[in-house]
Amino acid sequence: QVQLVESGGGLVQTGDSLRLSCAASGRTFSFYTMAWFRQAPGKECEFVGAIVWGRSSSPTAYGDAVKGRFTISRDNAKNTMDLQMNSLKPEDTAVYYCALRPTVWSRRPGDYSYWGQGTQVTVSS
Image (cartoon, rainbow, N blue to C red; front, side):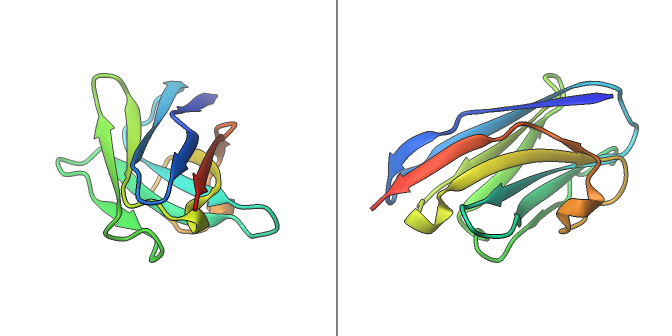
């Protein structure tokens, strides 16, 4: 099994920055993808971004709504994935989830086998 624990959520104002972190533990894979999704009340789960482990490079992908504002990075030593969120907007308010799948990345939440509990991000106007 894989355990994912998110941290770093909170209440910020429009234009502020916030950094989320996801710590993975348990079963390991030689090649896998970690991703961020978010879900606002009454809305579908939305792909935020993903990063691949197990290659010499760390390819990333982002959802259109956050491209250019959010950046995903990884720390191999700590086995964590971070989400740096800049220029936050009220529409970024959501519960942010970390997810993992032991293969190539996907934008579809149903393709991910492992999920964290989520962390709330609220951006006030």
